[in-house]
Amino acid sequence: MTLAFALSLALVLGLQPSPAPASVIETFLGWAIEGRSIPTDPPQPALDLPHRGCGGRLDPEHLPETIYVSWQLSAEAQHAACNWKYDVASRRATPLTPAEAADVAHRIVAGTVAPQERAFFHSVPQHEGRLTVTAGYCWGSATGTFAFRADGPVLVGELVLHGY
Image (tube, rainbow, N blue to C red; front, side, top):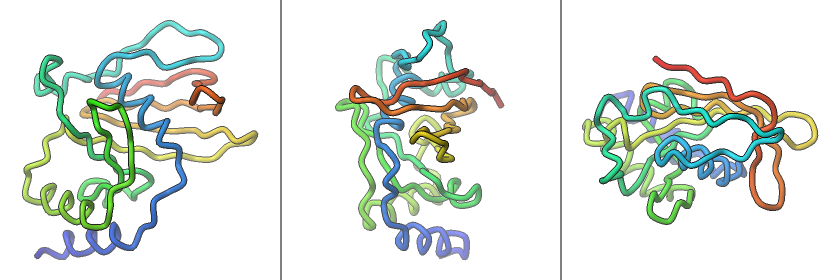
């Protein structure tokens, strides 16, 4: 076992699931992977995530079953660990169990988790319960601030896109 893998595994196993809203993961990945719209206030033109096709690896007819998510993990840890999963068929995000996190970390180090099966999220709480989130999928990322309403997160303000 490499030192990086051992440190990542210890980090993941020691983390408690964040109270971060699964709805942000579900909203972002539904947009990034399937092209569904992100609810906005005020209404904005629809944008596409840069490189959402993962360099030709994402086949819209055969989407991955699961996207593994690094939520609030450091830059080093997000490359070797995940603490959430998004089930593409049900469109639901749930925290990984410690055993699942260990398995995914091992698979990442082994190189068997493809880019189209990974995403990262970093968030910063704002006033009035809002959350500014930077999320990345493949070689694109987006930053925006979400307000939480009864029907889910709503993007307030501009969505800033970045491609790598």
